[in-house]
Image (cartoon, rainbow, N blue to C red; front, side, top):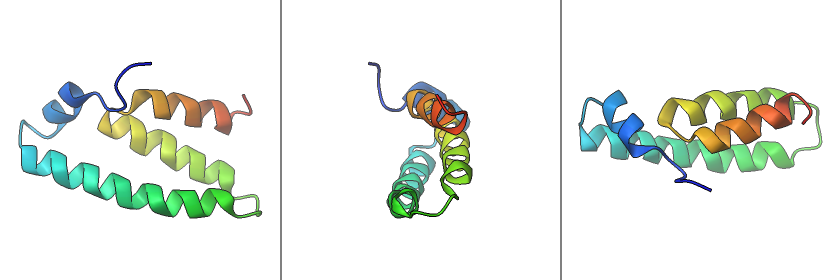
Length: 76
């Protein structure tokens, strides 16, 4: 298993601004808390939620999490 976040990717995305990197990771963690609650709900909206997790994870360089979310989304 590799790093949870590809920081080189994220720093490139943030044009090397470490403040932006911290802000993006902070927002991601806030979202992750909400995702945890959403995934625990019994309704059928989990597939939309894992789609969101997939895109958001890949957007910050958390590629392995994005891959797991994609497998969940497609029933793998």
